[in-house]
Length: 517
Image (cartoon, rainbow, N blue to C red; front, side):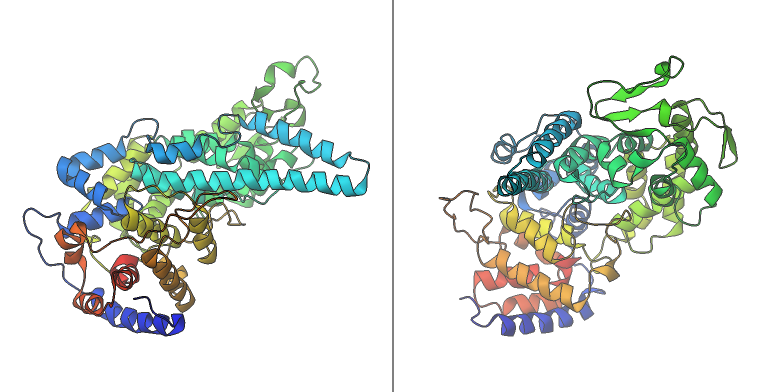
């Protein structure tokens, strides 16, 4: 039966969690039977994906760990989603349109709404425009959630979230809501396991980044340093890596004229400037807005000659030793521990340098390192909210595709890590201290109860006449008995034995310290 008093239930969970946490950190993992999936492999699977489930565990066991790792590091170019997930994505508006087409359409709609003479009708038209932008945002969130839950290339999905957070943009600035989905799909996900330089350039040329960090306002005589500063501080070298304010100013000058133009006609330029114009969809380098003076950037002399300066500056940044170290530490913090061993960071940084910034190679160095192997035990690192919620849904329903992603986004918003919703360029924190406070854990208990006790609206499609398809998961299944049970400490096992119903058992398991890590 389901607990009648939610507050009393939460208090019981908190007591159980406290008891479990004290033991789970140091709990030894007991060996599994030869036919079972080893606890080490289950933790590896959970660490490198958005959560272990029966189908992913069966696949890893069938192909071997090393082959599975190779599949994850070198997946096909495009994810193949289950038909039930893809059929939810296909009808989405603007799915196959370019940012130029999307921005042009919405710019026209905004102008039309603002030109309506009657005040009430103008207000109504503006509300329709805002709703259309919100709809595109919700569709982008739904696509992101469906990929995270069901795409077979799970490591690429984990890295898509990592890189979006690294190259963060906020959906509510200007009209970014309408292109944030394209930014994730075609800029971040498409390059998540490729060369870092390609990823950096793709973000630089996307209108979401240029508008978010104000480089559209950066012009000769009207310098805007926002984007230049964040490229160095966040995207490449990192804080305290040796660059100066003069370097920020030099990079800002190099980036003058890099912006957005959705007008069909080219800007008016004098004859000598026309060959230097660069237009690619909504992206534009306008030489009339560029500072053609020579610059000194990170000790390099860069001659003023147009967009070629940007390429030269990007090469300098990508090949700077600080970039290799900063990115390697960020990735290791995401996957290994809040304070990854310096020995591991240096190995990854060396691979970054020798592979010319190949992200998959850096990840391969990490996962094959003894430091990573040593981290595959309970209690090392608490999951951030995105990983926690996705892993709970994946474990609960495996490959049964949910029909409504709104509850998932709502849970993430409540936990403070809503998709595309971080306002500042630094992205969400990756360290456990940001996500293990009492308020956070209480919310997780509530979400565990919603997922464990019923469908929580996940199987109620959008629409006025939609009917919920009630279901509650059975987590105490073959995967649990043949593997997951071996990863639990004595206190958690004792707590699960106190469950009064399958729903209660589900909630206790999803609230356990081992599952939250």
